[in-house]
Length: 188
Ligand code: GRF
Image (cartoon, rainbow, N blue to C red; front, side, top):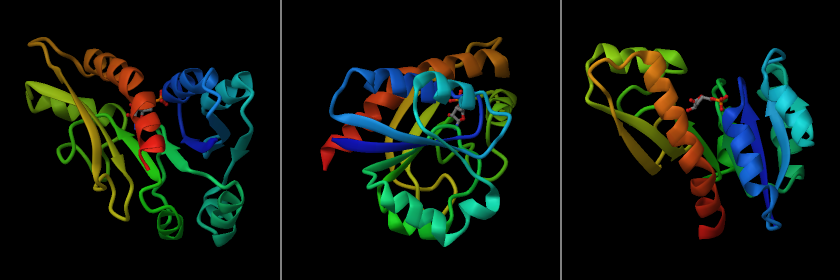
């Protein structure tokens, strides 16, 4: 049995898709959802999905006790699915190549501080890029810099808007993220 924790800050469409994907797979369990945002719709989703929810404050998140708490869960993988806080170094070091993130652009372009949510798509459209996509990568100490696991591309139309691009990117995320997680889990 592989044990996952999913960290979220927002809407949780990726959380929903990942949970549904693994729901009928007996060899993967989502042990909990960790959420830092009391207003996140992810909270409703976790409740509806019947997954234990752990709300965290920034102080708790950055404390050594939180790393210990996670260690007690005997996790195989931590999945960042729209989680907006930087992961503390002690947690990263406790999970080498065991934390994955999804970024809504083709890293290393449009990554790093400030590039999250619609800001990414606004910048891609403003730069008149012909393509964008998603990057699924391991998390290391540098923001949006860890080893890339998978990238998937999508073409921009001439009349592309940040909103229409966001919709395309979400489709890619839904298609690729659960499969990439499964591959990472069973590769080792
Ligand atoms: C996704 O676009 C993901 O790439 C980014 O944050 C967004 C989360 O969306 N890291 P949701 O909360 O899963 O709906």
